[in-house]
Length: 118
Image (tube, rainbow, N blue to C red):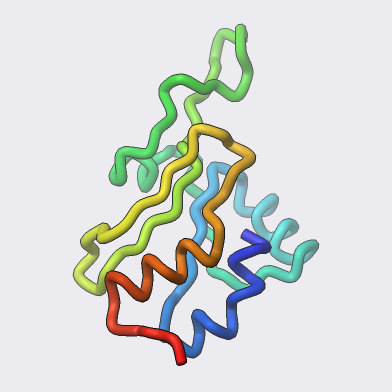
């Protein structure tokens, strides 16, 4: 998220909105936003509603291995969604520590939308 935040001005110039979705509590998200100076809209998806809508539930990973109530988590993903709500590009990672490279996201934006850089 911080890497995408570095490109905020470029996204703003191109009319691109960044939205993050997390299973964290809203209070945790707000604290993280403040701590890291993040500007993007950050939503809480504790029930995995949005995660399931986009088919991003990671069935192979649980937050508490061996616990009686292990909860599934979303696959780390970056999606480009057009104005009609259609997913036009997706980058998925099986590694929860890996996030999309902002330069790859910019290239995908230029390929799928009429927002070429200068």
